[in-house]
Length: 227
Image 1: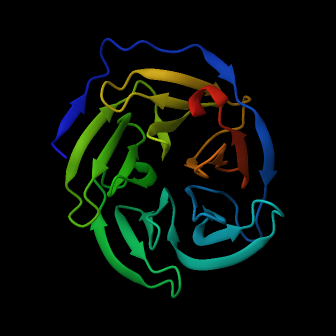
Image 2: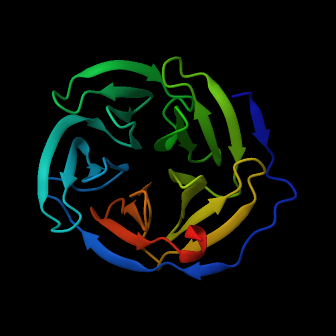
C-alpha cells in the first residue's frame, strides 16, 4: 500500500450517541488494570501488565493466562499475538507464550492501541493523536491518520476503522474515514467508563479495556454501522 497521510483539517464530526454497554467482565485475579484487548474468534484476551488473560465472553470465566509483558495494545492475526511492551511490539506464539520476534514501536513508548487488518498492524499514538499503519516485519510506517483526540484502542470491522479516545474522565468510540480521518460516528461512554483498549468481535460487539477499573466492557456496535 502506498504511503498516505490523512489531515485533521477540514473534518466534519458526527454528533455523539450514548454507547450501549451490554456487559462488564472482571476485575481479573491478580490484575489491577486492563490495557489492550483482542479477540481470537472465540475468546477475549485482556492485557493486564504481566499476563494476557483469556475469558469466555458467554460465561465470563477465565479460560487461560499467558505470562508476558503487556502494558498497552494487543492484536491477533489469526495465528499469532502482537503485543506492545514499552517501546517494542512482540510477536508471540499463543501455544507456548514464546516471543518469536520484536520490532520497535513507532512512538518509542508513547503507543497505545493495536490491531491487525489488511496484513498490517495499526497502532494508536496516544498523545500524538494519530493512528499508524505499520509493516509487521520491519515496523515501517505505511500510513498516518490524524485525530483531534487522544487515541487509545484501535480496531477494524467490516472495512470500518474505529478508535477509542480517553481524555480526563471522558471516553468515546469513534468510527473514522481511513482516508480523510473525518469522524463518521461517535459513541459516548458514561463518564468514568474510560477506554484503554478496543477490539471488535467481528460482529455486533466491541470489547473495551477499562484501564484502572480492571474491567472489560462489551459495547453494542450500532446497527447503522452494520447496514
